[in-house]
Length: 275
Figure 1 (cartoon, rainbow, N blue to C red):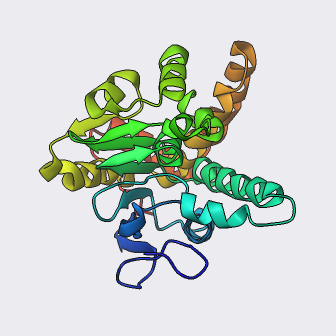
Figure 2 (cartoon, rainbow, N blue to C red):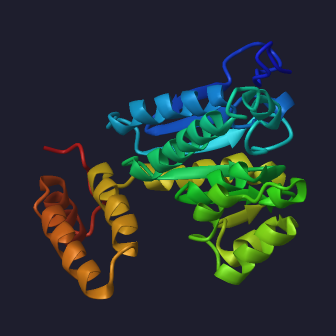
């Protein structure tokens, strides 16, 4: 279903992005099933807003992203993009702004202090595959398929390539990008695009179990570690060790870390809420 502007909207006319908080876990669900949860401008805006809110929410320690209907996410909304071409410059400014907005959304995930888990079913294609690759972790059901298949319609998936090529080996990424062929969930796990592959009936439970494990950790330690993880990957070896040594020094000075070490020595689980 689309509105008069050609934008994807939920079948029930509700919110295109649903949020449910369960304790320290935030569950986000893309909710435009008729459009296969395409990353329309409206969807990108909603995701950016939610991530901005989560960045300042210290009560949330893990985030999951799933999709409504029969697919996780089919990438950009091609019908909406067609309307963007109807401008004096042929859509150049529109497309540049759209891809910049999408990149901003993806980078927001990396900047979040909380780990983000993609819960993938059905298909994850083009920018939808990019979304999976951008999330810190991913759980897929056995029937899920992944592709960067824009080349099949003459549009090379250049921006999805950025995240994909940072997740899986170069030759396998290039093969997916140039052939437009899909890979199955198990192959995605072998290549490193997803962490776990489970039966469809177990997908939600397995994702929440992973989120529960993350939410039990000291949020401040995970946050400083997530930032350091991605920063050090862009550095040379010596710079990475120097940088992470500084990060660990800062982490060691946390009062909660001191309590965690004491609990380990005493052979008891840490209680982060204990004064």
